[in-house]
Image (tube, rainbow, N blue to C red; front, side):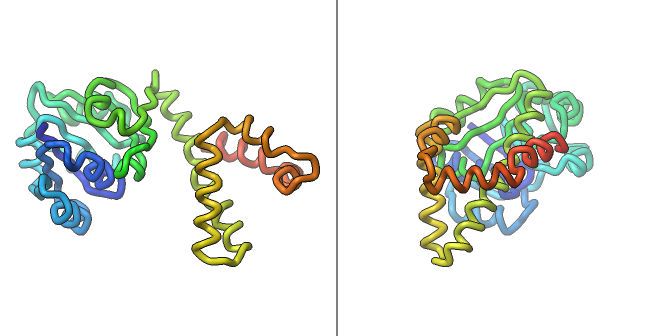
Length: 235
C-alpha cells in the first residue's frame, strides 16, 4: 500500500518503523526533519517528500500534526475522493478532520504509543477498524472506542503511565544501583502486570506483614488512591 505521513514526530516515526519491511511504499513529510531523515536512512521503502506529494501519491494518509496547526498545514493539499485518512490528533474530533481533508475520507482516529515500533503495543482507536486491523494487527492490539466520550476517558486513564514511570524511577533512585536497579524494577513491573490483572496481582502480593503490603498500605494512608482519582477527574 502507498502510505503517507504528514508530520514525523515521535509517535508518527514509531508507526513508520512498525510498518517497515511489510512491502509498503511510505512517504513522510519533512516536518521534524531530523526524524524524517533518520527514517529514510534506516528504512529503504521510506522517502521524504513535500506535503503535497505525500498526499497526491498516497492511498492512505496519516496525520501526525498538532491540532492547532492542522488547518493551516492541510489547507490546499490535493486530497481526493476515495482516499483514506487516519488522524493521530487526540484533541480534534473526527468530524472536524473530515472537513479539513474533504473530499478524502477521514476514516479513524488512531492513538498509538512508541512501542508500536517493535510491536506488542496497545492502540486506542475510533472509527473504521478494518483499515487499522489490516495494517497493525496481530502485531499490536487495537482497543476500539465506541464514542468520542469513551476515547476521552481512556485518554485520561492512560495518563497513569507517567506517574507509574515516576514511581519506578524514584524507587530506582532510592536503590542507588544505577541502570541495573531500574532495569530490574521495569522488568518486574511489566512482567508481573502482563500476566494478571491488577486486583489479582495485589492479592498475590498481600502477604501479611510483607514488603509489598506494607509499602502499599503506607501509600494508601498517604492518600495515593484519592489523589489519583482527583487527578483523573481534573483531566
